[in-house]
Length: 290
Ligand SMILES: Cc1ncc(C[n+]2csc(CCOP(=O)(O)OP(=O)(O)O)c2C)c(N)n1
Ligand code: SF4
Ligand SMILES: [Mg+2]
Image (cartoon, rainbow, N blue to C red; front, side, top):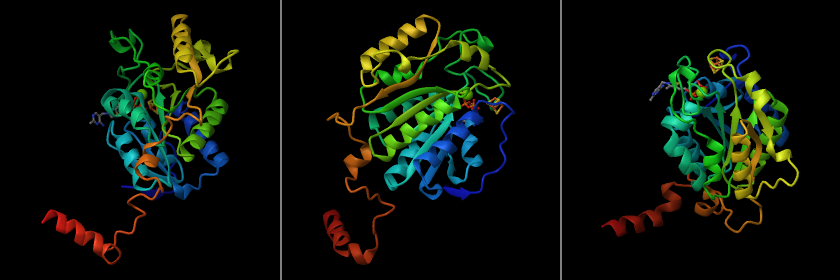
């Protein structure tokens, strides 16, 4: 159920990385000028997914791993809304993985923020798909969302940020919001957001992060070059962050799903479905079924 509510005090542990995301979402929405009543925040299940409770906005607490299905539904029902989906690495990359992959190719204009803390925070610190080998007995290779996203040649906006640098996170979110509000497509932002209670990686990540987008000659529209740069950075034991892909506005393959399906951007929730207006169309439909 979509609810417009006053924010409640946060239930997160003091120092949780998710506070950086909350601050950045508030600042970016204010900078871009998104009115609270035109914004819908769809939260996943997990500590991170509670974010919509701490903002004055319309919010949905989605099913575990199904926040993207609900966010896509909201956007297609009313493309005039600004939709932000936000959840954790467990929610997005484990139970939600199927929806995650398809979101890039669907290319609906919404912002998806994954607060990656490499653990299931809410359920007390089990290994997640992004956990490093050795964490809580994990023996599997960690999953990398940015490399996966770069491998899908869709006209998206892709970025990785760090909660320890909320200023950059705000700038990236401003870009992501503008991208989706211009109906250019899906904007994915993975924020490295440490769980200070079960996996405090603030210090480690601060040392390992490299903002590849600041390197000389960097071009965020060159998917292949950025993929190679990310791999090289990871091979050197570092974590690449920055804007990883930004499809050029003039790219002929650009085009969000809502523009393809609803070129006038009037979704079913705005359409006049009354019997009076549509009597002739209904009669024709009934006739076709007879
Ligand atoms: C269908 C279903 N399976 C399992 C759970 C238990 N559960 C609640 S939150 C969660 C994982 C949360 O991890 P993540 O998405 O990384 O969020 P975080 O708490 O780390 O922010 C799980 C497995 C659930 N609520 N529903
Ligand atoms: S358990 Fe971890 S992720 Fe959850 S609120 Fe506390 S610090 Fe944040
Ligand atoms: Mg998590």
